[in-house]
Length: 307
Image (tube, rainbow, N blue to C red; front, side, top):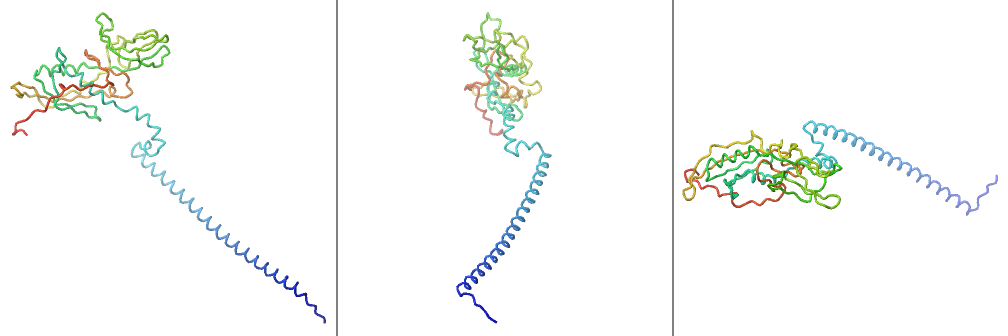
């Protein structure tokens, strides 16, 4: 029997190749096992996350529905709804500066324009649209009666100026016609520009002025009678009984406290070109009003036993 040995060099190459093959197969097996483990971990994690997310989403929706049953909260719980409601919120805003103009119009005055009463304290409740004040007058009950009668006949007007096409037009300025010979005496007006550049005066009487008119929400066809009461009749009241006190110099002074409500429409920001009607003084209620020094008087000094 004959045995032939391979050439030593060939035998070494064969053994080395076999060893490399075994190493490659072993590495592939380890790699496959590792990939399987990683895929299992990733799959489990993804599935658990999806399940948790779905559970939390359902819980959030359930809690949101429960919150809505407590009130209309959807406007405040998301930024989108908050932005959507900004315009509605803006339309509900009140112009509180108009309160000063209204208070100025209810003050009774003498022939020189000086007030017959003076305030010692003035407050305004923004939630109830109610004004309360402490006041005094050296003119006694006649001044108080004039004040109450003035409140009873105060009306207001608001609206917009419109052109021939029915769209709102810009007003250059507003004023009051005080010409005794004018049929529109005492009626406020707005000045607009016509197409040729000329100025047109539009009165608030629902008449047509070259296609321009004032679209009033309160005035009747005569342009004078208003259907919008500024101070509701049942809102005016005296807080306590008036009393006389001897002021400085021995002058008897009537002191009293009153309160009244203002129609919310007169203060709403959407009410354009608001005017107080029913008395000789008619002021733009969105303008700056200078508070005169004679509006207010210092609070009375009470005797020590009344403190």
